[in-house]
Amino acid sequence: MFELNKDITRFTTFGLPAKAAYFAEYSSPEELKALTLTPEFSENQVLHIGGGSNLVFIHDFNGVILHSAIRGIEEYSKNEEEVFVMAGAGEKWTDLVDWCVERGIGGIENMAGIPGEVGAAPVQNVGAYGVEAKDVIHSVVCFDILTREKITFFNDYHKVKNKSENRLGFSYRDSRFKHEWKGRYYVLQVSFRLRRSSLAHNLEYKALKKFAETLDHQPSIKEVAEEVVRLRDSKLPDPSKTGSVGSFFKNPIVSRYYFEQAMLALDPDIEYYPETRLNENEPEMVKVPAGWLIEHAGLKGMRIGGAQVDPKNALVIINTGNATGKDVETLARSVVDHVRERFAIALEREANYVDSDIKVTILGSGTSKGVPEVGCLCRVCRSRSNFDHRLRASALVRTMGLDLLIDVSPDFRQQALREDLYRVDAVLLTHSHYDHVGGIDDLRPFCAHRNVPIYLKHDVNDDLHRRLDYCFRAHPYPGVPTFDMHEIDSRPFFIDGVEIIPIKVMHGSLPILGYRIGKFAYITDAKTIDEDELEKLEGLDVLIINALRFRPHFSHLSIEEAVSIIKRIKPKEAYLTHFNHEVGLHDELSEQLPPNIHPCYDGLKLTIK
Ligand code: EPU
Figure 1 (tube, rainbow, N blue to C red):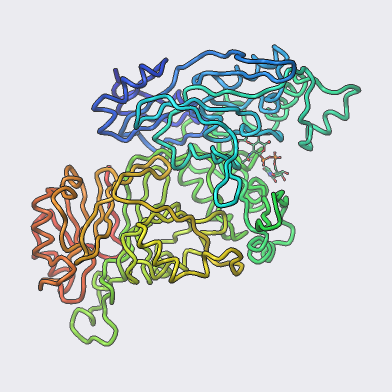
Figure 2 (cartoon, protein in one colour):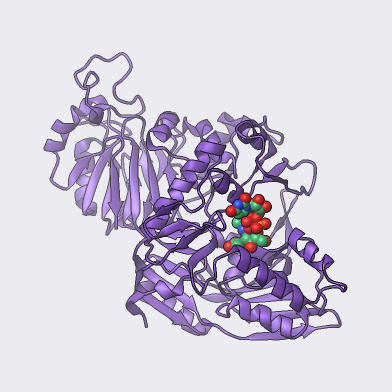
């Protein structure tokens, strides 16, 4: 059923060399269903790709790649003006545009020439020249991998807390398919609501308005499609000759407050466009063209290995022939850093990184008082070794291009500065004790683009609403951090396609959460773990678990107790964390532990392949 060790270089427009451990293509929902019932599917990281026009393979993918070959384009209901067109997810987007233009069906001609497949259009809310997928999609037929049934989502609005919200979560280059639905719903077909008209109607975009003025008649959809392809050719590299993913970065949309206070103060000439607001209660936002920022940071043509910032269009990174994923990653990071330095904004990628490795950084390995303890003169607290300086416990986990923060310790500011952290995609909280959440206000710099999502239990959410009430008011003080709170229980959930398995552990009499991500798990503040939860920790490559000191404690595992849990779970390697000063000097502690058990230290970095 699966092809093994498949070369997938040609499945992406970037053409970065990569192989997938397992690969399969399906042409019907039934074939897809059969694939989801295989052990390969359930035991590995799964990535569903479309035309690969937005993917950056950092290296080989150690998991399953699925690709839809569901074809077919048809009109399925029509009246005088409105036409519904249903297209298979595996159809090329440009074939759909041609099909419509040839039949005098208008609505998507402004999106001519976009590489990729139909299935990606709703995921990415693709857009160009004044039209976005959200303007023309009627509904999306999906396969739900939990129920293994078809389900249809309609592109309409529903009320959430008195606000009207798009059911598919469409916004600029974004949708629910990219976040909480990723990994759960695969697009089978997309239905578009279009117009029977050979005359073009969407001519608002500046370049198209200008084009229309050169004609003596209202342009036809064919003329607009041709003009759009001409414009794209002049701005974007020819996909058949030069590998790229089109725009590599998104145009940042930031609050006018942040823009004026932080960015304009650095350069009064920054180009920007005010975003339209639906009502006056919404904060004023501005869009800043990333291409302008990159060009004015002097980065056009910058090159690392085979990757280059396109000398013609700064928003694009190109493969000059022999680029690797690592080259692209290093170049993109350098672009982000230069733009941060020059304009005080961290660009967000539009491109998706595919990197199945899990990279863990220990931000802090100390208990609630940290080590050294204030006022203590013991030899551990007086040690000059960095290994004995322990900030309050938290960890950063990087996988599939996401930066996930587990707990936000009161030392977070110092930890973020040490690690040069400039983005956090989501926060996972274990519980609400101060040493695990005391740094939440310091997430402010990560809120310039969007609310930081926080995953937490109901009781933790209640506590935070009380303690940080100023962040949750209807009209908060400008500049306070803004969050999207996601309440979870002990059931697995997805963050942008990455499966997170909560592990319930007891912190004395308080139930709190640890987290498993792939073959890695992080547990802190446990005293006991039930048998059912221990089973969720089988087959780990790396376990990080708390161990306060040698003496027993009523709510924390001692070193001996932690070692006995590790021996029961049998991860390949285990690391102890959340120490107080009684554990002794780091080097001495290290020698006393079994060979596959190690003490954490601040700044420790681990890679789980
Ligand atoms: N700019 C520069 N230097 C550059 C490139 C751009 O200064 O090297 C500035 C220009 O000042 C220009 C501004 O950026 O006024 C905006 O450029 P343009 O109107 O060409 O559009 P864009 O913001 O660069 C977006 C989409 C494209 C889409 C075009 C047309 C994003 C990230 N990109 O580009 O989408 O084709 O608008 O609608 O939103 C894609 O997603 O892959 C893509 C190509």
